[in-house]
Length: 322
Ligand code: FAD
Image (cartoon, rainbow, N blue to C red; front, side, top):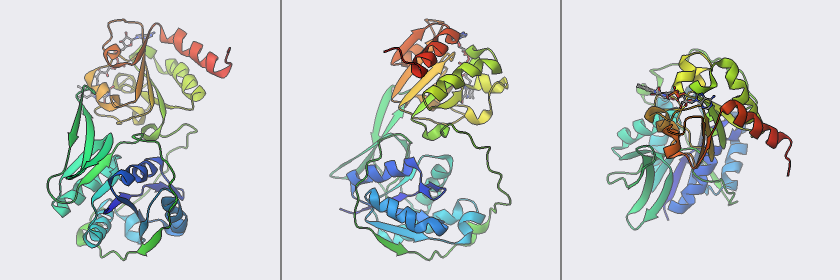
């Protein structure tokens, strides 16, 4: 079986969950190999963690360019590793950065690109990627027909499963192209830390819409989110009204999420909102209008006032009665 390269997304010296999911999925397609860029002092820890999730080889590259310049240095590194390793496929997390890296890499390799896969498979002709489209009403299975497949995969596509293996580390010295240093990062401001999980990686999301009636209405959304250890999402109507920060917007022009559970409270289910959450595994809608389109998509629906339903659910979770 050929190597399947996985670009390792990491933070604070740990591999992020979506990359562990990719190492798990990569085992279906071939032998996982991890690419750790800019690991710094945490490189050995990251390599060991990748090995614990099945990576037989860990390609490691460190250089100031990764931190100082945007996206292009990563593409140079991946391009060089792909040319040397000739893998079966390249898997990249479906974050905004990941999709840009994947697109540039595919162009460089003259390869086909599939983005936002929600599942991966393989047949005699190679890797297959499943995408969920048109408000989750169709699943499309595609393959790349030219070059080395470059595939981005949405978070929460599978549960990360350890598969400890003996892994070797290969140091790579990247020869950066002039294009790598064309966009310099001039400053970094860390976001105010929140105890809640990152929206795009969360297992559970509780989202509020115009039905919350105002910024104070999000209190019941946040209380339920905290009881479920969930992230908080919002519709564009709610963020445009200034009731919740734009960084929490879910949808076509917001974040694309794919949690195990998505609870939409006071959200009508406009197509642009669905575009960002339709691949959630289980969708629960709370809406007082029985005709709301969100119920067409929901697995479970509660017709009722969110100011009654959400606090009731929170109460039950905090002090279970049975
Ligand atoms: P509404 O459609 O007004 O729905 C509010 C719902 O709350 C209603 O169904 C109502 O019955 C219910 N409700 C009211 N009170 C209560 C209560 N007390 N209890 C329970 N239910 C209650 N939208 C996004 O969300 N994300 C996007 O990324 C996005 N991108 C867009 C891009 C473009 C180009 C355009 C044109 C639009 C985009 N929109 C996006 C906007 C989208 O079309 C909708 O306008 C928006 O999603 C509506 O938000 P909402 O469901 O919160 O509000």
